Image 1 (spheres, one colour):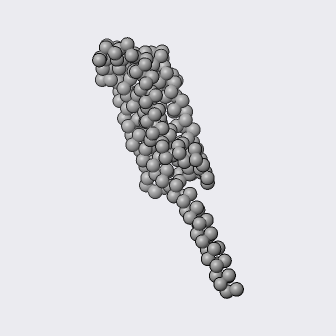
Image 2 (tube, helix red, strand yellow; image 1 turned 90 degrees about the vertical axis):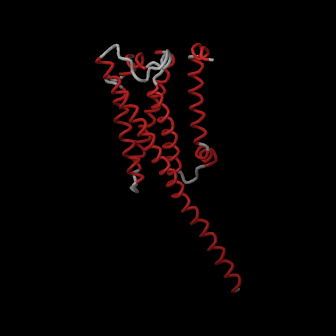
Image 3 (cartoon, one colour; image 1 turned 30 degrees about the horizontal axis):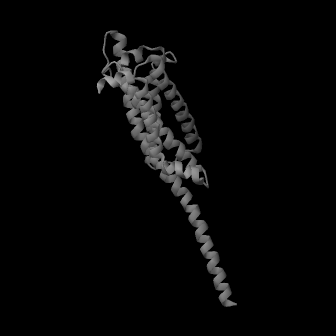
Length: 221
């Protein structure tokens, strides 16, 4: 009888340890992706902020002097002037880079707050998710406009495209992993292979650029 009680006690103890392990791994998983997303927000946000600021400067110089050639105008395809002068570049009545300056500044600030050890409220992460989703939609529209309406590319704009895609992936995975008790195979795979997913997204964009301007690229070979 005594041996039976000991076995039962050990079994209950082992089960409790297993449950406790599950409870511990959930915050650990959320913490890992929170810090990973925060690092990308700081680094990617800083890059996006710098690109947006420089675009604004170039836009002002072009407004002062219509013959000014922006530093990002390198060849017939990589030509910023047509992009900056298009109506798409000032969709809301002011230069789009001003939106980038404000948005990326917020992203960098929130990333620094998280890395400093502070916890953001769930509604802040939710607002960030909505913001980065809207940013991605805006970037996809600008991407399509540059390729098929304007017919020119802006290097600084492409940098903003790149960091927005990467941050959208990281923030989305972070929010799902941090709030889902059982991530499932699909979500776990998406989290594990996020760098590969982002890389594939970049290759799709590169493929679209290659196809759209193939007449020019082919002359370089």
